[in-house]
Image (cartoon, rainbow, N blue to C red; front, side, top):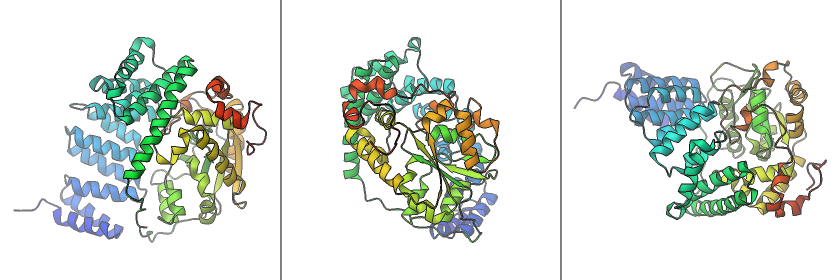
Amino acid sequence: MESPAGESDFIAGAALYALGRDDEAESALRSALRENPLHRLAGTCLADLLRNHGRYRAATEIIDALVASAAGDPAFALQAIYFLRGCQQDVAAERIWRSTQSGAGPDFFYVGGLIAMNLGDFASARERLDRCIGMDPNYQDAILARVHAGAPADSDGFDAHVHRVATHRAELSKANRVALDFALGKLDLDRGDIASAFEHYDRANQAQLELIAEQRRAALPLVDPPMRPVPSTHLDTSGDDVVLIVGMPRSGTTLLAARLGQHPQIADRSELPWLGMLGRKAIGAGTYLRHLRQDDAPRVRYIDKNPLNFRFLDTAAREFPRVRILHCRRDPRDVAVSCYTQFFPHPDMEWSCAWNTILDFQQRYRTLIEQRPRNIAWMDIDYRGLVEAPASTLRAAIGFLELDWNDGVLATPVEGVVNTASVWQARQPMHGRSLGRWRETASCTRTLLAAYGDQPEPRNWFQP
């Protein structure tokens, strides 16, 4: 039986890729695609290789061609969309989504809703998530996403639907009950029913802790992938173009990054997972930089706004001596309440599920900030200043990055992709309504107040 065109080059390319000989692998896989542009395995293998080198735009071109050749295959289109979202290519994912709706199921409309949210099209997000829920009324991830896609109008029936689902919560899995309770908590919080909201949040967080413990017991030991060879091309590793935005989650990191990312000389890469792997020596500095710089239009500064990178400041200082760090600070009580009422599925956020662990994590955070390396460029950004005096605060940040001022950083709505838990907030005009919001929930957060008291915002951020 004759092999498909391009098969021998594909087999050679896949083997070379497995051996870490990526340059040769790319050449062989491209040869396979020249001989057979419809060779899906060769295309997906090449796209994966390109993604692993931070060449996200090049990977997107390969995936676009494969999807075009597989018109009418919604299952492959969905796989392509998930791949592109992993490459931070939501615009390309949206393009594929729009061209492949025929025969699609609830998963397709769910991910379409997420893409629309990341692109700031909240009306389309609500419409798509409603389509998903219409197909599967118990699709809890879609319900949870829907409550964060803008306040639902009472007339749209969504609020009533969520409460109908809650009437048979005993039939749902534990994971679905967690999502449902976070959704109900958000709806009650938006209505001002604080007591009811925290009944849901308390139940959701307790169940989430149990889920994480179960997953940890069932999980295989975490093993980092082996370090891949660094390409021979020279990379400037001084870190002059590297900007880290760090701080407690929910301290304004997304808001700051989204605004700075409107500057024509700055690229906001959102929350990258690579600095921790660099600290564990699972990757080299070159790999980190390739994923930060990527292969789109060059910029002068690149932002990695993973707030938890404060855990790896020693690594940043060692590997990138000219790195610049913007540290976001916010009233720890507001941070604590915001974290507790937000669903974070990642194990790194396990601490956000209970008041005592939130307080412990905040103390550890303060310790790491106090003990940070003193040989790195550092600037504190206060959340209050960011929302009450955005022009002067952002002007100071732009100056710290040694760039000329650009009025675009003040423009609303924010353009581009925002793909963090603050996706809604980052798109809104600057406002101070979230300042001191812990006071609204004081009756349900006694552990928090016992630690911090109800005095005005602490002057010394690092003393509870």
